[in-house]
Image 1 (cartoon, helix red, strand yellow):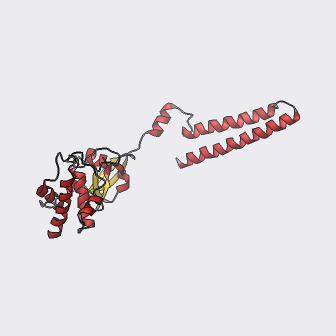
Image 2 (image 1 turned 180 degrees about the vertical axis):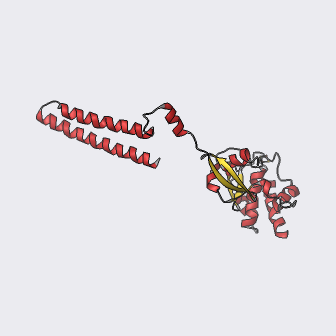
Length: 233
Ligand code: FES
Ligand code: FES
């Protein structure tokens, strides 16, 4: 694709040179009081035609804009990648534009990861990548090959709830709970990154999440309880 762009830029430069040449010719012709010479017209027309055709050929992969060729060129190509999720290695066929959240939900059936806005605004899709919270909707699955992804399904270990999960039960922290998996994964990241976080720290850390039920006070109580649970575990 980079080569294509380079090609098109080079052709743009050539057209620009021709336009300048045209201007010079017109000036010369005006000075000589004659009309355009046949050889000039032929040369310019030929080069400009070649450049335009060249661009079309380049963009169509040398097949002169056959619709089926253009279609094939824009078809996504599936690739096989290795993905580590919740301690398990998966070999998956994915397309270049598949996001991590899409693959988790629709290929691995890990539906605990929610899709709300699908554009980095609500935080419902948050998962941990190497223990750091990320929006799963805004990261391509190719970018997390060979890294460790943790979803809400992977928090419980050998039947023991994660301190954050326990805190949700202790504080009854959510109403409809659609936003819960995202908040829980961010809190799990916080417990690891800053076990002594204050309520104000929790507020800042969780700022990238939206709870449509407006349950923020209870959610902050849950975050504080999670930190306490982790410290006393
Ligand atoms: S679904 Fe990813 S941030 Fe909203
Ligand atoms: S509890 Fe309903 S969206 Fe947060």
